[in-house]
Amino acid sequence: MPTYAVISRPDPVSCHLKERLEKILAAQGYTRDEQIPETVLVIGGDGTFIYAVHKYIEVLDRVRFFGIHTGTLGFYTDYRDTDFEEFTADFVQGKVQEFSYPILEGKTEHETFYGINEIRVENAVRTQEMKVYLNNVLFEVYRGTGMCVSTQLGSTAYNRSVGGAVIQEGLSLIQMTEIAGIHHSKYRSLNSPFVMDGATEIAFTTSSFAGAMLGADNEVVPLDNVKRIEISVSKDKCVRMLKGRDVYYFDRLQSLF
Ligand code: NAP
Ligand code: MN
Image (cartoon, rainbow, N blue to C red):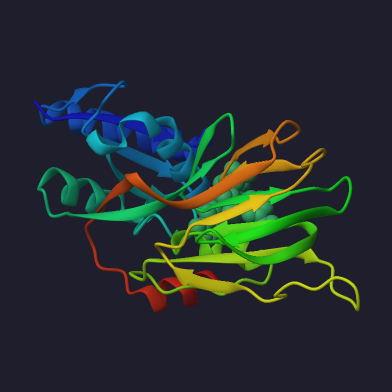
């Protein structure tokens, strides 16, 4: 029996769709499994989608995600609430295709984090100085508030707010963008978003990250006892997403921005 779980944003429209969806799926012989469902149906926004992926981060290889947006169109969702019938029919009738998207893995000396959108380091308390290594070669000494490393999917999220480029769907690239970098006669770093091959390994090292926070999508942790952060595309985790209708990337961008 096929298994599923529904993750929805706690607003009335999303909750109502969740109830309707669960009734339809029960009638079609689907079983609810909150632990390791074959499919996680996500009702809400891009933020809800990211929350759902983090909830199942330990079992990503066994779970796939299918989303409907209660609002606009999303970057992680191809259906709006007005398309609910089509969303349900496409799923139940198997008119969907699975695609895998790379995610970022960030490692400190103590912990591992995953970023579907981005992994960022931010110090709002004092100027953060850090060495930036690309594939183990010292690239620059950076000073400023922090740095954002994003995936293609995350290029329209925080990355875009800090002046990074939007990257077209389907390109396996990563992007490193400065967050308020300091540039004058004494301090110099690239001062431009840097789009790199997806296989690039990025490392930030410093004598102190005191006051800095590491953000992996919606998760944020202090970096007080950390001196080294390694960020690259995860070798053993990716996100499996279902797509039913074909939404052209340029239409999606045009309708959202
Ligand atoms: P959130 O409220 O869930 O998300 C903040 C906004 O970012 C929402 O409007 C969300 O869209 C949108 N968003 C998320 N992923 C996106 C993507 N890949 N492309 C375009 N828009 C996207 O906030 P959160 O839970 O704290 O953080 C989750 C993510 O939000 C982070 O990974 C970060 O990239 C982004 N964020 C951005 C800023 C900023 O730009 N200054 C600030 C905070 C967070 P929906 O309304 O569809 O959920
Ligand atoms: Mn949201």
